[in-house]
Image 1 (spheres, rainbow, N blue to C red):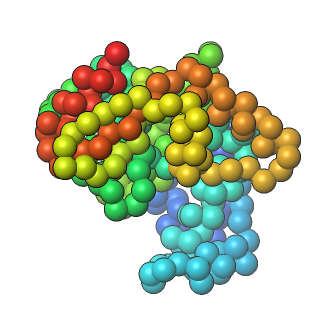
Image 2 (tube, rainbow, N blue to C red):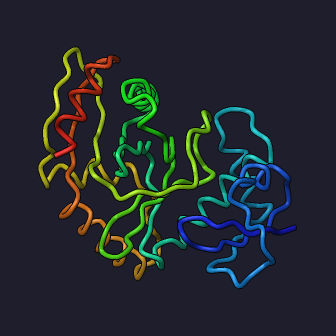
Length: 236
């Protein structure tokens, strides 16, 4: 079975075994006739079984196929000046604010507070695994069907205004991250290529990102004051 989706301004053909992935991608499915895709994605039963065995909780084969498929997509994105990043993206005033953190720190909780603070003005582009893509010399954050368990996201994209790493803190404090610190934090949130040629291209994208996008570290409580602190610093 197969279908095509339009994602990150690319036509992606997905060949699948289980119904889970098609339902997940429903809003992204191309309605017109099948066209020549930018990439074709298919994973093996062996890949799916391995993913299921390594899962820390009980999951279905369909869910595992979805994870494997997105990983396979991510591996091919380098050729299109793009990469997957683990983070949540909030759009405000036509610009994307990217938040990244270790699991359990409170990325989702913090971004939910942005929805509350900027009610009617802010929206989610993606709540978990957006794609970053360089287009026309600007870095854009794109929504994808892989949005995390809350399913926060949409099909839109927006130019990246800033990236903010989150840590828990008793007080709300934000500072710019120094260049030497960015790489260590950023590389924990991206999927690295495996082929030498792709690694070279990927590193060039990372260099451009660190040169042109401001990075911040926010130590924060769970409060609307934390949102205000972050926004005042990052809006420039």
